[in-house]
Every structure is written in structure tokens, then in C-alpha cells.
Length: 149
Length: 477
Image (tube, rainbow over all chains, first blue to last red; front, side, top):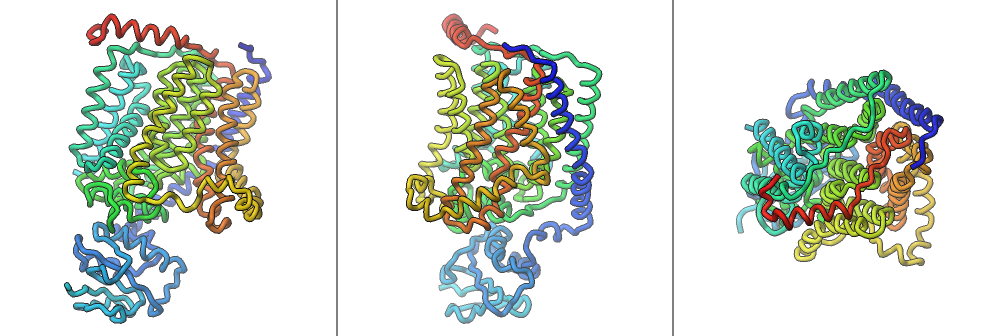
């Protein structure tokens, strides 16, 4: 096995020092970012934290859906032009976020297979389903149960 | 109940992992146990996660009792095996100098301070990144609500990326089970604990070869890497992949330096976690295994490497069978078979140019990885003559990993700018974390802290056979 030359040892130490100096240089912003995250989360309500990643999906809509749709039910989401979210990601987040938020309720793609219809800007009455008790959460946002067949 | 249950699960990880390390011979004293407590925790997490994944794939629900049964089996089997396996407690090869003490202390202080700060940031966190709430966490929730895997609406496979293996959701589902509540808010801190265990494991594995002065400052730098620290507690599957990539990589590197077969056992275990965490994990573990095979010495050692490489491959088989039985389609974002179609490739040549122009930034950017790759490149140059196998191993994993990523972006049908922007950080994370975890070892090798200790593998196997013949029941110590 080759003996390590002195210059190689010095080079190794210099490299170690350079890596550590780079970390030290970055450390204040890293600590600051972690501290900011901690403070932000600490200042929010539990609901703010839980729904923080919802991309501005209407909170009352999400909360009402959880309240009305039973845990064993299926639901479908319909969208339409009655709601124009200011956040460009809201509509693309709607389906996957609701699927996460409403578990164990199961999302189905076909409204005809669903027990409930969650309408985000759409018109549930136009689906041709027999709906019971349409709850209008706010203009353009409605939740309705499909009558049993 | 919630936090107490999670603590109970963590204690179970530590117990099962410690029994495993005892069986393998890496822990045979209290001192070894303390040194390797972090590794024991990760081994327990890996073993129980793999066991839970297997149960799910054969249709058995992942209940608390199922996880306890797996732990009892692991402890029972490993304690039975232990008397037949000799112990291995490597001697320390360095002496602590005053400069090393100061540098090591500075590294420890910075590392611990930052980990504590990360805990503060994660204590109240919820799933924040898109993929975490779109499919990683819902899959874990679905396992609990539905009692296992499934393809019906609301089940695991109804979420995005149904072809991803089940280790990560299974591991998170265990947290829900033991806490008695499906609360995603429990997961960020639990994942933080895994990362703390990672650093403890790296210290434990490298302690005999790397002095604190060369070990702790690079580990502190590792923790502070921007993309890595953003991943801690992110609840993405990348966390499990990078944790297991780091440990498997260190185990593989130690094998190359010491030819101690026990390190291959660790490579096989954590390589299996890599394979069952994300699809690219399987690709990386095969890459590492092939490199180990090529770089190993002929004969017995290569046969041992083949056995170790076979374990992650076999770990994937039940998942592939489950996918076939349940008609789960493969990932639509890339089909490697397209690499064999010249016409297909030439039609998308502009994607190759875009990828080669943009992807290197995800590996080299200071704002993402500080100076990790330049440091590693310089160390590789220093190691070329002293530890050529280690130099080749590290270089090949990074270079081939990069080429693999380029190939994926080239052949994928997804819009290339969008695909790179949304996944570039994640695809670079595996190789960069692998390199960051190996920097202390490369430094020590370049510094000349330890002569490679070559275990005579044939003599080791002969001793193991003799022990089995004279004491098959393992009644003698």
C-alpha cells in the first residue's frame, strides 16, 4: 500500500476545511430559514397548518365536505366556470387534495358511481342525477347527496 | 397515546435492529451497541418496513399486531443465529490530535444545533409539498383505512404513481397504527428522527476509520446542504431513498476497503429498502451491486457480492408479481426499452440538448448542494492511487447516475422543461447524498488514517463452517 505524501494530507485537510467553511457561510441562512418556518407554523392556527398546502381551495368547501360526506361514502368532483380562483393551481390541486383531505371517503371519476357530488364552480343539476338536499357552501360551490337508486 | 405509541414503535425499531446487528456480529458489547445505536434504529426501521411491505403484498393487513409479530420474528431468528456468528469490533485506526478535537467539536456543535433547529421547524409541520399530500401520505392513510393494499377508489393504488413500491407508505402506516390515529402531523417529526439516526449511523459505521476532525465537519456540512435539509420531514419517498442510499453506499465502500462480509449484509438490507422505496432506487442499487462485483476480488468475494446483490432483486419480485396480478401499469414517464430505438431517440434530440444544458445545474449549484461535487471530485483525484477501488466506485455511481437521469429525460413523453423543473432536484438528490455521506471516508483515506484491512474471506467462511459443524445448535458462545 502506498504511503500518503504530506502534500496529499495537506490537500485533504484543505478540502475538509473548504467544505466546512462553505457550510459555515451558508449556516446563517439555513438557521434563519428553519427558524422562520418554526415561527410561521407556531403563529398559525391548527387549521391553517393542516390546510396550508391546499392551494387556496375554499376552506368552507373542504370543511363542509368533511362534515356532510360520511366516511364510507364515495364522491365525485365536478368543476365549471361559476368559480374563477385567483390561484392558478387551485383547480389542478382540487381533485388530488380533496382525495387526501376526505380520506377514507373514496373519490370516483364518474359522477354516476358517486354517493355525493362536490361541485366547485360546476352545475350539479346538469349531471342528470337525482340529487337530495343541495347545500350551497358559497356562490358556485355546492355539495349534494345522490339519491339512492 | 399518539406520541407514546410512536415512541413505542421507535423503541421497537431499536430493539429489532440491535438484535439484527448482534446476529450479524457487529454488536457484541455495550460499547458497540452505543456506537451503533443509530444504525440499529435504521436497521429496525428497514426490517420492519420490508416485513410490513411483504405482508401487504401477500394480502395481510398491516395491523399493530402484524408489526409486533414481524419484530418478534426478527428478534427470535437473529438471536438464534447470533451464537453461530463471530463478533467483529474494528479497532480504531486514528489518534485524536488537539486540532482534530477542535474541528470535531465544532462539527458536532454545528450539526446538533442545526438538527435541533430542524426539529423546531418540523414539530408543527403538515404535508406541504405537492407529492406528499397528492400520493405519499394518502397511500399510508389508505393502508390503514382499507386494511392493506388495493385498487378500488380510495385505496392505495387509486392515487398517483401506483407503480411505486409500498415501503414508504407501509412505514408511515405503522406510525398511524401505533399512534392509534391517522394524523399526518405525526410524520414530519418521525422522519426527522430517521435523519438523526442516519447521522448517528454514519458516525458509528465510520468511527473506527475516520477521526472526529475529519468526520464531524463534513457531516455538519451534509446536514446543511439546502436540498437535503429541505427534504428532511418533507414526507416524500425520496427521504427513505436517500437514507438507505447513504447507508448502503457507506456499507459498500467499507466492503471495498475492508472486505468484511458483514458490510455486504448491510448493503443487502438497505439496498432492499432502496429498491422498495422508489423505482429509481432499484436502478441505483443494481448499479452499486454491479460496481461492487466488478471491483471485488475474484472468487469467493465475488460470490458473496452476488449473494448480496441478489437480495434487493429478490425483494422486488413480490412487488412485480403483485403489480402483474392487479394490472398496475408501469411508469408512463419512461420506458427504458425506448433507448433501443434509434428513430425514437433521434426524433427527440432537442430534449437531449435541453437536458444536458439544464441538468448539471441541479448537481453543481451552490444554492442546492454547496460545494459537494467539487469537494468529492478533488478527493477522488487524491484517492486514485491510494484507494483506486473507492475512487472508481464513487465516480461511477455519480456519473452513471447522471447519465441515467439524462436518459430518462430524453426518452420521457412529458414536456422536458416542466419535467426537469419539477423533478430535477429529486433526481439529483440520491447521488449527491451518496457522495456527501462518503466525503468523511474519502477524506480519511486521502489523509491516510487507516490502512485498508483486508479480511481473508476464505478463512472467514472456513471458520464459520467449522463453527457450524462443531456446534450446530449454537449453544456455545
